[in-house]
Length: 119
Image 1 (cartoon, rainbow, N blue to C red):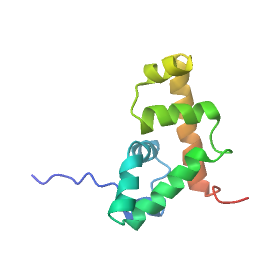
Image 2 (spheres, rainbow, N blue to C red):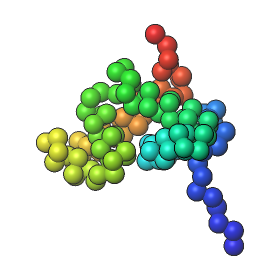
Image 3 (cartoon, helix red, strand yellow):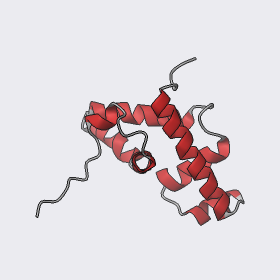
């Protein structure tokens, strides 16, 4: 039985056909550093374009609030658990979950509407 490749870097993601799915945005956030290494070491330009859009969405001041940014970076980029991030910032695990859901929704909306690079 042939295994399905784990490669998520393809032209469908580059052109945003799956940005409407929350699962895809979360998967891209979890592979943030893999995208960066593919872009820098293997010269994968599709990965570079996706990483630039993702990085801009995470650190753009109008896309995420500070708390959403902290929770997304802690859970999806660094791999901490929700309760660990909650203890770091002094909030409940449920609040971290709410910030993650709202943050992913805001990133999803910004990628779909392509308003990251407008003034």
